[in-house]
Amino acid sequence: MRPIKPLVAVATLALVTGGTVAVVNAAGDDTRATCTRAPLVKQVEGGQRIQVVCTVPAPPPATVTVTASPSQPPTSEPTEPTETPTTQEPTPSDPPYTPPAGFPNATNTGVPAGTVLTDYTGPMLITEPNAVIDAKRITGDLRIRAAGVTVRNSKIFGDVRIDADTVGASFTITDSEVDAGSPLGENAYDGTAIGARDFTAIRVHVYNGKRGINCFLNCTVRDSFIEGPADDPTGQAHESGMRMGAGSTIVGNTLRCAAKDYPPDAGCSAALTGYGDFATVENNLIQGNLFVAGSGGFCAYGGSSAGKPFPNSNNIRFLDNVFQRGVSGKCGFWGPIADFNPSAPGNRWERNTWDDGMPVSP
Image 1 (cartoon, rainbow, N blue to C red):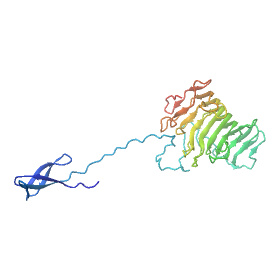
Image 2 (cartoon, rainbow, N blue to C red; image 1 turned 90 degrees about the vertical axis):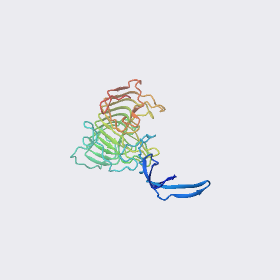
Image 3 (tube, helix red, strand yellow; image 1 turned 30 degrees about the horizontal axis):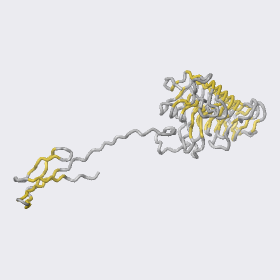
Image 4 (cartoon, rainbow, N blue to C red; image 1 turned 60 degrees about the horizontal axis):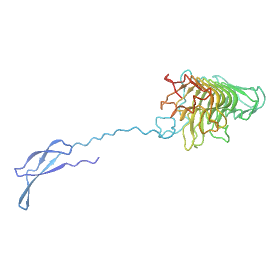
């Protein structure tokens, strides 16, 4: 602030000058002014004007108080809150997420501690029924085209899948870790760690890619840590923790989508999605799972999305799940779940709670 100059008061006096006079400064405070002893005499029409110049000390500097107003809420789906949202960039050093006690995490899923892995040298296209892959380090994508295949105690850098149009194949994957790599790919399956039909996944830890698990048809996922897809700075990938179609049993898992938003289109939709793009979303049990806060606009979708080719879900049962409140207080940016129709045939929403024990309404 620029310094305030002393106030100069000019008084017209017809008396003996010298000493002090009382004045009021700009701040409204009474103060004392020092005046000149020798008056200034000026000849004017009709007589003389006698002036005394008095100097008043400058008032103290003004005190300015600035009150910060809360910022306006974002107008689009936010990224996961950080301590410094204007400067933080995605980095591999982001701390790992640890779910609350009692839910699957990185220590009680994936390859058991002490397991010695050896490099896998077998075929990536599995056509032998009842084949077993145990304690292997696998680099690449496993395509399953046989019934009864087992993958256990292994780490896969790629994906494990049965294509949606493959009939008669099946596999079980247990106590294994799947790093799906890049969220981008040449077709719809690329970037999904495990999919898309007729499989069982138990105690698996999946991460990266654009989606942890896709259950298009007839899948069971239990006691697993679906940690979240990778960031996509190119702005292309629509991401989620898991997607359900029909015939899904999703029980006792930790479901999370942690990818950050990048324009124009990349970022998380939800920890669990279910859209009627290709078929009706139906006959799914979602029970006893933890929905991690900050997993997109909503933490879950219920399958009855208006505007989709198959908008009417049925037999969707959300039971005994826990939704974290998180920073928004609502799990997702807008709420815990979207497009769940409690009036649809067989749909149930029972005993779902927030992480503070309060009931959650769909």
